[in-house]
Length: 424
Ligand code: HMG
Image 1 (cartoon, protein in one colour):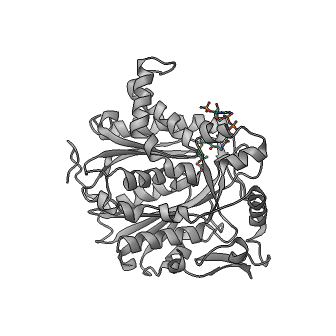
Image 2 (cartoon, rainbow, N blue to C red):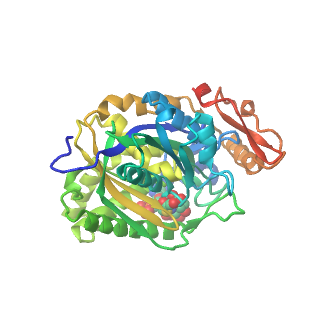
Image 3 (cartoon, protein in one colour):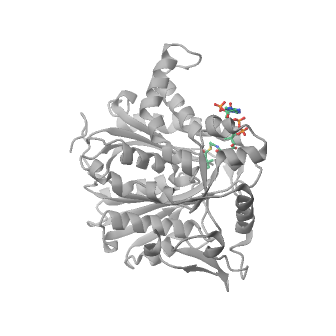
């Protein structure tokens, strides 16, 4: 296939993608006004325009199932072809039972489909993706595909520093041989792990705790570590150099973070610190404007979806860029705690044909805007909605259309109504 000047010997990668998120969102300017903050801080300082907010009837299971259903349907893949299902999430619905097994049931996947959940903060789906790549490359798939779903609800709580960096949503990816979208290049992947307390969510808390500014430093150090390992593994710079990359995707907890990450990316490659307004800074800004900024639109209106955030940028690229095929893209995933991976893939010749199948614009256009009062009610209602025998969370209360919804816990068992095929 048409990788530019490279030899990607194993033909494994992303064959299908789809997004599903909550039906409601908040304008960041509305949040800023009520919190007494200059809206420019959220909109320009963090780079966020809107934030997806899950109602008590939308959880990690419902979002994952609908996203996966959409990926199967829009790419005409029979559920019987799926031999591995991995859900990456840090907002699971049970300490023991994986979200993946609910998704397996709701999609009607085969009993011999290996199914499990991965957790490592925002790195969970990347861990799933690379495991799927290894499963297929090792010959264990026997022609079947892997379904990887990143699904999360990012919540820090009302009036916290993290509040403007919340969000929710799921990205489903189907991984197989002869992929239609992105061929992964396993030799260019590198890893990084370090125990740090930058962001965590104890078992007793619905909300994440974060040492916000420290978490940014941890993220950037992890970039340097994973990128360095990738360079060593690749054995050559040819495939990793910035001038070989059509686009660079990073984990995006908020849009400005991608800018900071790209800054570190340039500095690490150039072996130089870039400050002030010298020629290097001009070069760095031009590189950011071309390789990163155009693909952050979905992140800016959805917010942090934790483990799926980097893949939202990839979707934005695939729906808008009209790549001819052969473009090399870099992927950097960071999960607090922390774990990270850097790798690259090559866009396939057929990717542009599927731009409309990937595009979540219709779903986003149907979202309902929350006012602040409703947003705060929603957050408060979500705190107890899944408690055993709590009042029934009713989709009608939140003006939700037909779809798959969580409707409460009875006798300690979570209950759902509707199906993925009902969802508009
Ligand atoms: P903060 O203290 O509220 O904000 O925390 P700030 O004072 O740092 O300001 C943010 C930016 O806005 C700054 O830009 C300001 O200058 C600018 P920067 O200097 O960084 O370029 N600013 C303005 N710009 C224009 N007009 C104005 C204005 N005022 C200020 N008027 C923080 C921000 C992100 C730390 C906070 O929201 C937070 O704690 N968020 C949660 C943690 C987080 O997202 N960490 C990111 C790295 S860790 C990660 O990505 C993993 C994660 O996704 C979890 C996982 O792995 O599962 C979080």
